Structure formats: C-alpha cells, structure tokens
Image (cartoon, rainbow, N blue to C red; front, side, top):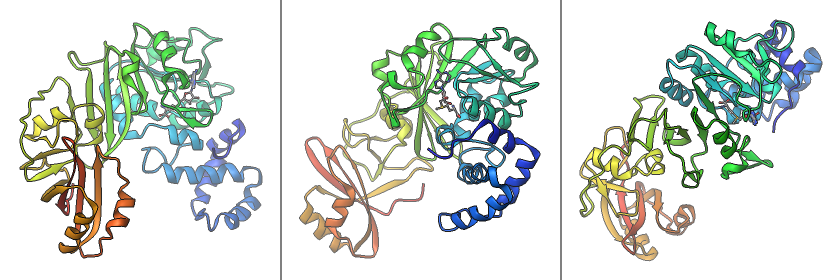
Length: 414
Ligand SMILES: C[S@@+](CC[C@H](N)C(=O)[O-])C[C@H]1O[C@@H](n2cnc3c(N)ncnc32)[C@H](O)[C@@H]1O
C-alpha cells in the first residue's frame, strides 16, 4: 500500500524547498535497520513532511532500475509497481512515433514520458488527482491550481484542442470510459488489482477491459494487459504482442486492427537492457523437422512461448522440438546470446537411478528445469542430494507419454 500522499505533500515535494529536503535525505541510509533512528532525526527538521519525504526517497531508490527519470520523479508505492518500465514504454512509443496519442490511464506518466519523445502531441488522463499531480511534476506540466496544466475534461470539452495543435503534453482528469479527445491513437493500461488482489479477469480490471473496447470501438487503440490474461476469450481482431525485458515476460499489448501489422495476429518482442531487441510474428515461417534430440536443448524466451511462436523461433534458428507439445527446443547449435544446455545423457525419469547417476558424475550445484511434468524442482533437489563439485542442469519433460530427464552440462552464459 505505502504512504497515502496528499495534494499538499505533492505540492511541497515539487517545490524548491521540497527538492532541497529530498536532496538532504539522500544522505540517510533509510534501511529497515536504520529507519527508526533516521525518522527521528528527519522529523526534527521536517516535522509535517517527514513521512512523505522518506517514502519518496525510498521509492526513488527502488525505481532507479525501472524508470529512466526516477531520480527526480514523484510516485506512490502502488503507482510505481504499476508503472510500465521505461524500456517497454519506449518500445511502444517507437511503434507509435509521429501520431498524436492519448493515454487514458496515465497515472504518474511513465508512458507519457516516452511518448512525448516520439509523438508530436501527447495527452494523459486519469481519475486519480494525486497521480495526475505527480505526473504534472514528472513531465514538467504546471500542477493543479492557478495556471494549472491539468484540465477537467467533463467541465471543459474543448480542453485538448489548443495543446494538440501546440505539440504539448496535456493532462486532464477524465474517465477513460468517456472518450474526450480527438487524438489519433488511444492507449490504456487498466489496473490489474481488484479488491486488493491481482486479477486475470478482463471484466474486473479498472477500468474493465470489455467496457474500454466498447468505448473506443472503431478507434486506433493499444491496451496493455497482464501477459497471463486469457486472450482467446476476448475475440480480439487485431494483434496481441507479448513483451519481455531481460528474460522476464512483462506485458501483453493488444493492438487494434488499424495499428496491427497486416497479416500479423501474434508477436513476441524481446527487449534487453544490454543487447539489441528482436521480434518474431506468426507471419514468419514455422516449418521444422521432426528429429531425435540434437546436441543442445534451448529454452526459448518466455515472450516466444507465451505468444505461441515456439515453432516460428525454431524455424528461424534451425532448431526443432523435443516433443510437439512441449516448448523446449533442441538442435546442434545455440542461437547467439541464448543459454544452451549441452545434453550429456538422457534417461527415463526415476529418482533412484537418477540420484546414482548424479553421484557417479560428481554432480554439485543442480539447476532443474521442468515443463509438462508435475514436479517441484526444490523438493526434487532436496531428495537428489547433489553433493559433488560439478554444476549440472536437469531438463525434465515429457517425451510422448514418458517423463524424461536430460542430464546437461553447465549452461553457457547467455
Ligand atoms: C496500471 S495504472 C497505469 C500505469 C501507467 N500506464 C504507467 O505506466 O504509469 C492504471 C491507472 O488507471 C487509472 N484508472 C482506473 N480507472 C480509471 C478510469 N475509469 N478512468 C481513468 N483512469 C482510471 C488508475 O487511477 C491508475 O492510475
């Protein structure tokens, strides 16, 4: 949950005095061990603002790996958790380059910051005034009050016209379910928590996804969703893009037909903080041979698996499947930059002979990957008791009807 910021807190934190106090607090450790002592000292000089200051400094530290502007930004704990990582927002903004865009659930402005670099005019709106005030700070828009840059769409229907023409970032308090701008593209990122719990039900998102799709029917719309959402229930006519960053699947983005690439209904976009991004779509070839396992096992990126593009990935890299229903791939080479597992041995999965074989091989640190079998890797590791010195990886999966274990060498670095 975190600290509940007030409008006064946000106004203070965004002022010159607030900024100076935040710089001063940088010198405090603010760790669980030091927090009580630190707070006592901070309260002596910043009595009424102490809690807001401490929370902001701690959130900024947490945000550094996620958001490009984190060092200067304001957020609430929930807003930071919900914010799209800058690298993912940038990827979307590049796809929308050159168009006017309205983010109808803009929160503290993580998407807007990236959109404003590639798009001629950008509008953000939300129902939460605290988040809007924080977005105004984060984007350099005048805050609420006299000369405010935050409009109230329901009160001033023509609010966006001047800003759109000027190429500015505009903010408004508005309900996402009541279209209120003429931007060429609408983007939305409904909140995934209902009753304090995460939901995968599209109708329980805030705002509900079916209502959003109705509200913007016929418009160019991009909606960010949880990658676990059941898209088949949505009868979505455009493209579903699954995005991963540094190996972790981050989101699904639904692109309406006008924004989708012709002939593409599924896409995997694989982003990396260090390497080059790449993507794969269902318009790519997926012809692969059926063969016995090769020298290596390859576990494709989660975005490829979630987008249902495992065969397409295999075809692109000269690989084939261990089993047609399992997402592990195999081949005699490993795609560049990917962790490959060199197969040393293969056996039917039975604990006792496996333990003996691991012992014979002086097996030590043991990584266990499973797919298609109902196994808890940690419980299995505890039972196998690998005590040797040589790291190994076990890939346990189903080949036909047989649970099979591939004993593999230490994986190469990815
Ligand atoms: C998941 S957050 C969006 C995060 C944002 N994309 C970012 O990267 O920072 C969802 C936002 O939707 C807002 N929201 C929920 N229902 C809304 C509605 N009916 N109209 C406008 N905003 C709404 C919430 O206040 C919240 O800020």
